[in-house]
Amino acid sequence: MKFSIQSILENEQVILYPLQEEDFETLYAVASDPRIWEQHPNRDRWKKDVFRTFFDGAIQSKGAFKIVDKQTGEIVGSTRMYDYNETENSILIGYTFYATQYWGKGINKAVKTMMLDYLFQFVSKVYFHIGASNIRSQIAIGRIGAEKVGEQEVAYFGEKPKLNFVYAIDKEKWSLNRQ
Image 1 (spheres, rainbow, N blue to C red):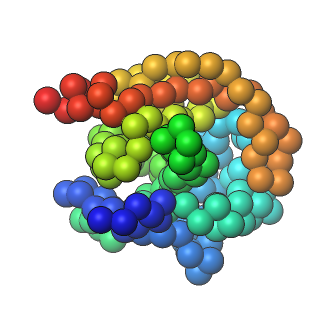
Image 2: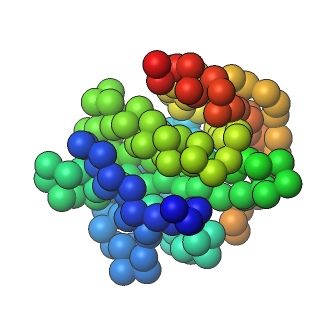
Image 3: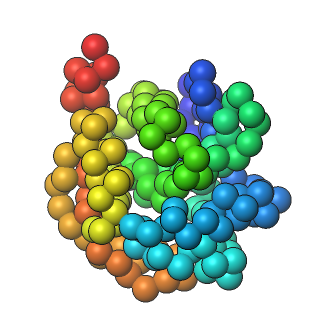
């Protein structure tokens, strides 16, 4: 199997498809809910012009996905793999958001589990950037076994840098958690 940061990934609940330019309006329909962005680094991403900048960065990253609910066929959010570091044998996951009606339904855990199972075939460590004020995501990432390892100013595409917490999980710990 060849490593790609934009392979189609699928489990029982969701399918991750590479994000395409034609997905903008449908994904924006999800992202236009201000509640999604209350704890994210840029709380204005629900505004169409601000979301357009976020979306353009996602397309240019060549590692962004739309998340589709297998039962309904609806786009429920987006996530991204980025900054593959061959020397360190690591990669990042971030820029994740979900429609509020999917919060607390196990979708995030299903998506992250699928992504980590895929990535740990190729890398030994996965990092996550999570906004310093995004308590919901910090709790969720801790539940899958990632630990806070630092803090970093992250320069988002077309936006001012924002403080993020850096979480990490390595292949060995993930394997132990999966048993």
